[in-house]
Structure formats: C-alpha cells, structure tokens
Image (tube, rainbow, N blue to C red):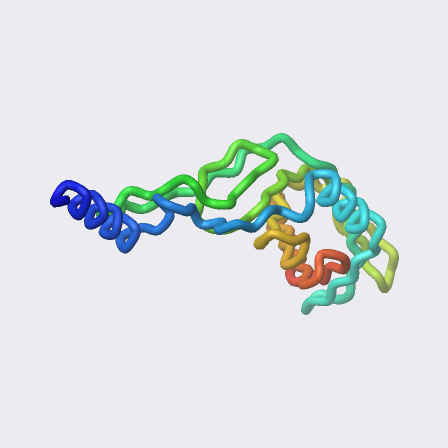
Length: 170
C-alpha cells in the first residue's frame, strides 16, 4: 500500500512540474495540413505582385520562392527541470524541438525590386533564404521571413490563404 501511494505521489509531482512527461504539449490534436499545402501557399506568394512604400518611394517586389533544404535551429536556455521533447512540433527541415505546435518550411529564392514610378530595376534577382512558419494545427497564422545580404522581407497571414507584406528592407 505504501509503495502504491509513493508511486502515485511521484507521478503527481512529475505531472505538476512538467505535464509534458505524461501527455506532451499536443494533447490530442493532429495537424490538418502537410508539406504540399504549404508549398501550394508558397506558389500563391510567387504569383502576387507585392507593393511597398518607404521614404524613398513606391516599389514592386516580385518573389520567386521554392521549398529549400536549409536547417532551422533554436537555442534552449538552461532549466532546472528537463524539457519533455514530446511536443506537437514538426519541421520539414532539421530542427530543434520547442513546446509549441509549429510547422516550418525552409525557403530559397530570389526577389526583383522595381521602382513603381520609373520602372527602373532597384535589385535584380537578389538571393533570398528564409522560412515559412505556421503556428497551430491548421494552416493559418503563417509567417514568412526572407533574409538577404542587405536586409529582410517579412510577410504574414492570419488565415493561411492571403498574405500581407509587413516589412521590406534592402
């Protein structure tokens, strides 16, 4: 009887300290999309003509992106409790686990930037590397971050269908 109570007490403490030991972070949900769905969303990004205004004027950005093969890594800080790597995180590239339901797709490609007023080319086939990240079990709340040698381009989507251009720097 004492042994049984001790076992339940230990399990209760473990669960109170880190419920990931027993159930993981993804408690019953399944991802409602796959890599092909993210690539389809990527194609929609390529078809759109993006406009961006800053202090230098108005510009058009033409993206040419494809699924990449880069690695995504994250750094975990020290914790007195060991992390349970049983979370609902997946990646289509090598990645480190985090306790969120996320999906990451590495991206490679180019962007051509044109001055909207004059039609002059500002940047031709600027090389991009980045990622598309979806937080949650459905293809919504997506973010795209694209880096190049002179800056960054960020897009976001609240519905997983239409994106908005949040930032463009070069």
